Length: 427
Image (cartoon, rainbow, N blue to C red):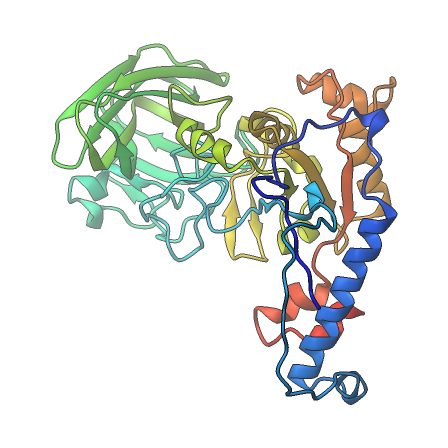
């Protein structure tokens, strides 16, 4: 007889207050044994069904007689542990950044994730597939004005677009524009297919510098007009400077555009541009946070599944505008790298969820994992604590749940190409 007896009206997965670090005891031995037994039974059953191991298959009884299940609602056998259920937060398919894209989709409409950044390839590091001298997520003015044929490998009359890997503010590249002739010459780049909501305020910034003389401006508009707002930047510097602008969208559109224009003579550099709704929660989308809070998630695992075993956590700390983008070989996507451990802890705390961190087993080292734990949890005067403090987080995060690896490497490296074997997971 199988008996499953929840108490009437009791929610065993209700949110519980998280105990302080010093009081966290983890799972009870009874819970560990129960989970191990359940996993063993599931493995035996699945392995037998798939016919992967004759010895395992022989352990499963071939009993086709009828079975009866009786439920005694007056008895209680136990409670479901809080941490059995949770969510996996992985850098894949726009779940976090929303603007992630693979190499063959440079100008697709971005759908949005947890992070509120609206611009794709905002640090100009994702290459130039169109060979027009402009970074993947952007298009040159000539494409907008139907003079695209005037550009040959990024060069046109009195101008040249190019990606500069020597001079940059962000992680490793900037958009350079060389202007020749008199100071009336201008050129510009656009980000297209942006969603603007009527009545919503948006905050923009960009880093600029120049080698000679000139000016710049930024415009916010939609396909076919009108221009919603314009901010003139009359004085540019030979050093990197940050310029900001805001606007309120007068209508709903999925054809929104941002234009960054320069005028004068010499070389102009553009880097680390950003566009977000003005009402974000420390960079996170307010609507997403509001939608997730009612789910009452007890536990959130980060930075995901297969992605975790190629992720270097040190890339995701420090000033976001200077973090390098990188290409995720696991999911064939560019990772803007605006969301790391510090942002994740903001996210988990905003939801009232326990944080679960998975260290890099495939390409990382024990030392890397140890430093990550120190960065998250140490309170003594250590190098990792000083680094965390420099990044604006003096207090430790008190991360209680950590794991080495999530999915066995045969899963990550083979499963999505060929097949995943249950016995491999068991080993």
